[in-house]
Length: 359
Picture 1 (cartoon, rainbow, N blue to C red):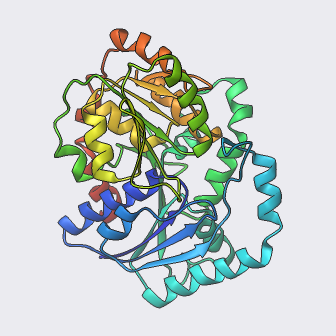
Picture 2: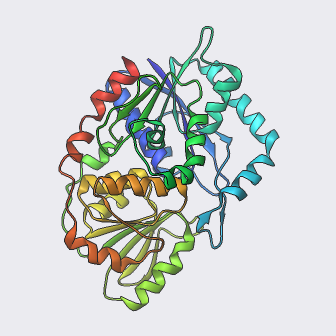
Picture 3: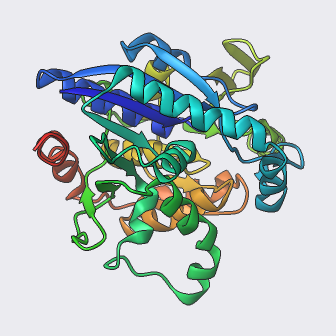
């Protein structure tokens, strides 16, 4: 079968999920004919994705979160205002996605939470006569699963995320909800709960105990917080990764505080050998930490990552905070108890995805 991927271009997780699924599909004799990426003004396509995806890449403009206040927390209202002011750009993107689907004519479109793709299916009825069905994949779809319970306060907080999830999955033939743990889906809502999609590189590395804190900063604004903590705890080794465009491959503050530009292999090696992980709560890296059994401090950047952190905490991944208070992680490490079922759940991914996508 021929598959076309469409990928939301913010963050790291959707890219690594696409890499993992592409490897699974090719292993079973299928083809990824192209990847359409909804680009963000503030993000670059990761080099590891360009190098490893093995398919033609095409970019188009897509709505994005807008960072403000030292690039720390994106503001939903500012983001919506900025995106509403660009209707002609998004009209062009909708038409571009439709043209590419018609031109490449895949058997199925796999949508990694890209809103323009969901809107294109809604507006142009791409799944009709003769029709190319869309299958959507993301962790956020757990919020649409009637078997997933949240509190009344969380329902208000996650309203926008639920709305976005519905738009991205409009007219989807199937909604694959990535989950930290096995649980029922909903046939009525076309929701199937599936394991996380971890890249083959994750399984090739054996985790070992370490003496340093491994970290990831989605936005460079958190550098000030980590630096302030380091000045008072200079003997604790820190290895952090960021995607700051103007930064070199390595930025050495001192012998115990080093920042690396995001590199997939170096990132995984560092995580596998750390004592604990401090992160802005991307779903994929939380799954990697759970797989390597590394205790985690989760510092969500926006509502999507607040959901990731909340859900990961239910599987015992770690603790949450509003700032990079690394002392909390050091205090938590001795109390950490790994989830004994997570690895087995992850190892079911290949069989489950082939059954749901190609069956």
